[in-house]
Image 1 (spheres, rainbow, N blue to C red):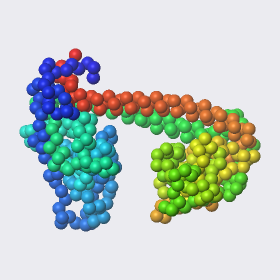
Image 2 (tube, rainbow, N blue to C red; image 1 turned 120 degrees about the vertical axis):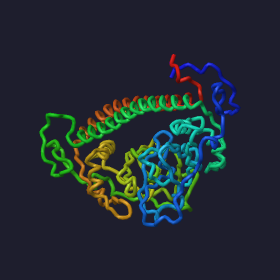
Image 3 (cartoon, rainbow, N blue to C red; image 1 turned 135 degrees about the horizontal axis):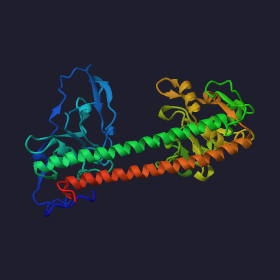
Image 4 (cartoon, rainbow, N blue to C red; image 1 turned 90 degrees about the vertical axis):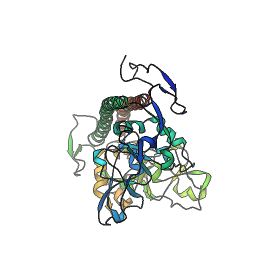
Amino acid sequence: MSHYKPYPAYRDSGVEWIGDVPEHWEVKPIKIVATHNDDVLPDSMEVDRPIKYVDISAVSYSDGIGSTEDMLFGNAPSRARRKAKTGDVVISTVRTYLKAVAAVDEAHADCVYSTGFAVLRARDGRIEPSFLKWLALNELFIQSVESHSEGLSYPAINAAELVNLKTVIPSFPDQALIASTLDRETKRIDSLIAKKTRFIELLKEKRQALITHAVTKGLDPNVKMRDSGVDLIGDVPARWSVKRLKHLLQSPLKYGANESGDNASEDGPRYIRITDLDEFGNLRDNSVKRLPSDVALPYMLTDGDILFARSGATVGKTYRYKSEHGPACFAGYLIRGRFDIAQVIPDFIALVVRSYYYWDYIQRTAIQATIENVGAERYGEFPVPVPTVKEQFEIVKAMNVAMARLDNLTAKSQHSIDLLKERRSAFITAAVTGQIDLREPA
């Protein structure tokens, strides 16, 4: 971006979020150049007609329109009413802090959108549709929408007020040039982001493959192997045993405390729920709930306990409790495993439950009812390769070194992605507000 010069002359736009603009650019309310909410589904729509629904949660400034929901119109929420066409822009008018803003491409032109969106459409002869897209994806404009929203927990802006906000309108030649340049440059940046994102995915796959090999084959490539007798595991070192998880426990698997609105506390131990575990099985720091000590006492965790999530989207996820996390108990939809350290160390089990074969076991044994469920009995039957305790320590130590190296590569790649996204956002903003002149690179 540094190789572009500013425009020759600027003037005050009169709009705080815009600042100075190129002298020959105009400043107008959005409604002068774009209509809003032109198309809606008719009331006579057949209830058995299939639709692809797009809710606010499926749209983001950084990723565009994501997943759609296939459903019959009769089963759709009442807010499923907006229609859009290619070139339109959808902007969320509720929960505006989510920055749910995206251009509608051909793949999503036949979708039905929530009435929580304002659908902008370029007026013929007033603005290029390709420029309207980038105008709406300008970070400063999105911030302006958010700042004009009302409400603290559920900030919203009326669509009529949104289109009354002012924006900058370059000449048609400038609009076309800006749009084509942003199309080209963001495509290049997006390609780099995609490559780095894929690299992170490959690192995750490598992590899981390394762990799987270590906990089922050990560290010595020359060790004598034997059939484990378990298809999921295959061969294991000859001196290893294979035991069911329930035979490695100090005490039986235990379900946690059921949640009640009457047992909340401000100073008791932390109450760990399924929702407190992220997708990687780490403990979230937000929304901490506590229970009174007397209620929590039978469900208190000790260092080395491992929690298994037994239902819902988190089924199979695990969390290795450490005393440094502070006193904690656990909820009813989690199962506690407390292990016999004479047979197996918790850190080794924590590796096992991150292996490919563990997840294969979960997928095969999950009971499909209204939600997936893996109870204590099924967790108890999970087969675990058991090296000597000395080998377990060696495997954990080796994996900690390998994981640290992969974590470092992942962190560097993610930092690079973050910088690219910042650069992309800054370039869009600079181009559509006239901070840089794309007509003549320096």
